[in-house]
Length: 454
Image 1 (cartoon, rainbow, N blue to C red):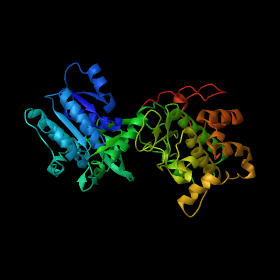
Image 2 (image 1 turned 90 degrees about the vertical axis):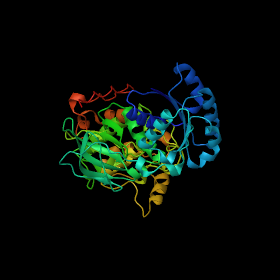
Image 3 (image 1 turned 180 degrees about the horizontal axis):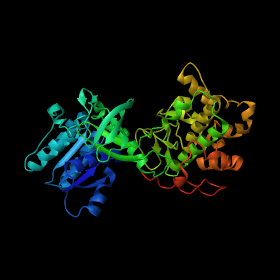
Image 4 (image 1 turned 60 degrees about the vertical axis):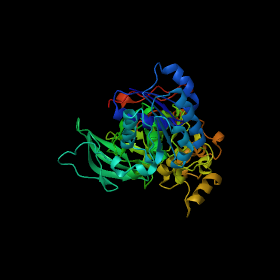
């Protein structure tokens, strides 16, 4: 079976491809952006596909595309996905063909299965699925029975069931997701499951944002970055299975000044983590102590890429002008909603470094907006005389203008090594010797960290 999938959002195409692979494991999906469909069809479709799916955020664009596709693939089922208000605009094109309009608000794996199976079974009968025709019975089919001793965890009144994993305890909750320690049933390994709140499943933007984290981290194979083991879908949930960090996070350790050597060692490890993602064109955009995690061996890794930006991925939720991140550690350009690059992460690194050295935040005020203003206007704070040797490093990290900062994490590493040498940079946070990377010297690029024996 072959499907032709057309949508302007790469994340949305990935979501639908995952759904289709679950419904039909042997399905071959050819996908592309709307502007490219004719060239891709000519190049990659030797035979007409078994069905075509097309979606767009603009009703008139979707109507025009549906009309062209209905002519090009006459006799093949066509599924159009758009906002419910688009249906009256698209409807005239769909009448008289093997076609469906599915409101994006009703999209779920079960709904998609219902619609496509009807299309494939009724190739000679036009079908129209309205918003009000999609009922709750389509949404939940279950996904395996829990282990006999499993404790029920619920979202929106429904038990969470993720096949192959047994939830053990909840360790966190955010605006979109909940985080659990889980046991992988195949081998008993403990890991972390990050699960999208079931209420968000009908919101394609939230789905894309959640999946964005998986796609971002999947680009990086580094011991300085959290390891992602799995990502998948059930009828009610999207989940990411990732590495568990029994050593907790950096936030838990703050509260009193670190010894200078320890702060330098952790700065070095965080610099290596940033260098590893920046080399892939990734800007973290939310570097803060809770996102610096420790393994049992005290090695450090960077986590939580939910609001990260990747140069090669243009997404509607990482556009300039949107304020994301944490104001306490946010660069001036990010706080003002301007476009950011890797140098913004370096500013956040400087804010964390100051807090490790002094047990104080760079700036404090009665409101977050005032803190953002201070990041943009106030000079970097002064360190105590006993730490004056680190003032230049701090000033260059916390420079207001990106052009006056270090220009890369690699440049930070070179500076730190040249001033303090290797001996003081191998403490807490460093990757164990069997898998540590070589630090950069001079202008030479750092060797890639050794692959972690997961």
